[in-house]
Picture 1 (cartoon, rainbow over the protein chains, first blue to last red):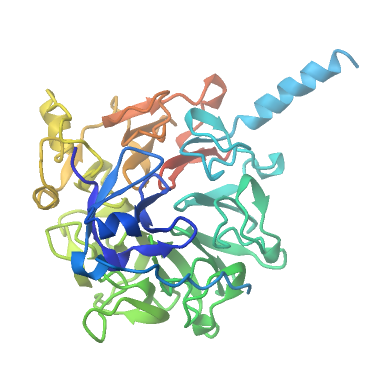
Picture 2 (picture 1 turned 30 degrees about the vertical axis):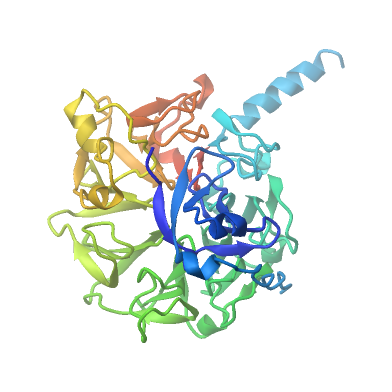
Length: 78
Length: 400
């Protein structure tokens, strides 16, 4: 199998609830890679709903001892 | 009384057979009341009073918006970022009237991955949903769960909308095009400084010749516009060739294009009754057997390709053979699948099928268009049948 696409880590969004960086999957769900995965040098983000996966481009040193990024802003009411 | 009940039930079933959905359903995006995938067409539960009045359906990442000919709006599916416009962040598995617009007449709608937009007959633009890439045009990166008016356009007249994954395009009555949201691939035009990640205030996209723009298109990180002469312009992530473009590029000048549909890595073009594809489906696994049929192979250039860069360079214009001799009258594209309606009123689908988004009864992929069975009672004229796609799902509506 080959990766669906190649995405830079800065184009992924941190999802505190999932504890993972995410990127839209064409099926409607999200490709996910956890901080623990990144610390281990993992490069594959998987979608829990389908067979597709992404190659994540990042610098391993940036995540060697990374702490959790801050939680994103809560949803604002209009 | 005993006899009346089954008759009424049957009538209800017949009443239901005018709008269908199929494909991925886990966020309620099929609008059929449940949260399951469906591999075959299932009734879309729009209220019966909408029958014959649905003029357009916008499909997002996992939500959808139906627009009626008298300007009402219904939304359903994933609501996690407020994209359904009901004032909350709930998923809704059944179409629900967006009551915010009860005193407005909505004329155009669009849906991105998790954001939604609504233009009114008075030219106002309202947006809701995920704003984290500036795609709501508010000047901040906040999300909104009720539609709000975009202030940049209060003195202008918004006519058309097209939203991609994380960006928004707007066409004004004065023929200018604005873009906002993610700018990483050039999809909202030229950035002032290099590596600008996003623009949260609408910006004019220039570089079009002085011809009337008749429509806008967006999906993934792609953007496109079509002018009155049938000339197509594309910008954003590479679709033709290998390089992203911040400036609109006039492409395929020999074609006179009447309709366009964009996916995340492919596009459909309708020109003089002929259907063409550019780009390639990206979902295929490497071990996919090479197709025996040469036309089908051409149509699916990634099948034997082993690397992404290689496949993206095969972005040629490929003519799709006519389907059973029928003329194509309407086209639609999801992220990795495609749909069309023929002059005989038949719906065909092809591409990625893992979630049943082709509606053919299984999860198989298809390399050539295959006919979707909408049931015996569905035979209708092509003019009245519309097909629309969200990321991993498909909607068909008979507007008779």
